[in-house]
Image 1 (cartoon, rainbow, N blue to C red):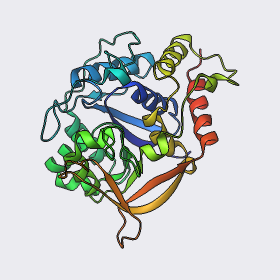
Image 2 (cartoon, helix red, strand yellow):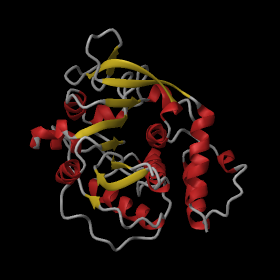
Image 3 (cartoon, helix red, strand yellow):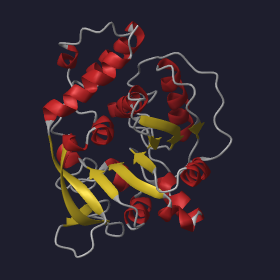
Image 4 (tube, rainbow, N blue to C red):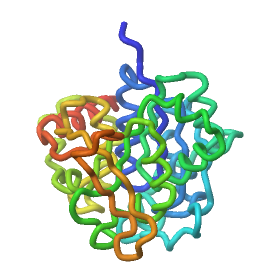
Length: 303
C-alpha cells in the first residue's frame, strides 16, 4: 500500500480555503493531514481559527489538530477583513455548526516544526494564506529548511495581481514573509493567479454526480459557490496539484519576491534562465482534470 503524504495546510479560512481544506480531508487515502495552521488575512486570526475548527467539524475530521498562528504580519498589522470576497464571518456569511474543540497547545510555527521533525524530508506544507507562519518557523528553527520536502504556495502571479497591478493578496500582504519562504531553499510549487483565475467553479460541478452526498456539506458548497458568483476557488486549485501533478503545466524557475519597492511590492518574478532553480511555477491548468478532482471531493462526503 502506498504511504500517504504527510501535509499541513496553512490557511486563513476564507471561502476558497474551505475548498482547499475539503480536498485535504476528502482524499484521506492520499493525504495524512497532520494539522491545520491558521493565520489572519481574509479575517482576523481569531476568526480564521474558529472557521478552521468549524470546517473540520462539518467535514467529520475533528481528528485533525488546529494550531493558531500569528496576530499580525512580520512588519505590520492586518488590514480590515475582506468581507467583499469572504463575507463578514470569513465564510461567505454561510453559517455552519460551531465546534467546541480546543486549539492545539502549540502555536503554528512550533506545530510546523514538530511535524517536520516527525516526518523529516517527507512533510509538505500547503500554504494558501500569507506566508507569515512559515517565515516565523524558518526564523525560529534554522534546521527546518532541511526537514520539509516541499511547499505548495497559492500565491503570486506571473502576470496581473489582485491587490495592486502586480501584487497578489497572499504575497502582497506579507511580502517580507514570502521573500523568506521563497529564499529558504525548500522546493516550491507556486500556483498563482495567472492560472487560478482561469478555472472558475460553477454550480454545474454537481452535474453528473450520482453519489448520495451529505446534504449539509452540499448545501454549504452550493452557498459558497453562489457567494463567489462562480469565480475561481484559488486555494482549491493549488492543493489539487498534489492530488495529481498533471493537473498543472509546470515550468522550472528561480522565483523571488519584491518586498521593498512600493509600486512592485508583492510581485513574484520567475527567472526561467537562472542557473539555480528554486521552484516550479504553474503556467497552465488542465481544467477537466481539476474539475474531476472537485467532483471526486464532493462525492467523498457521502451519506
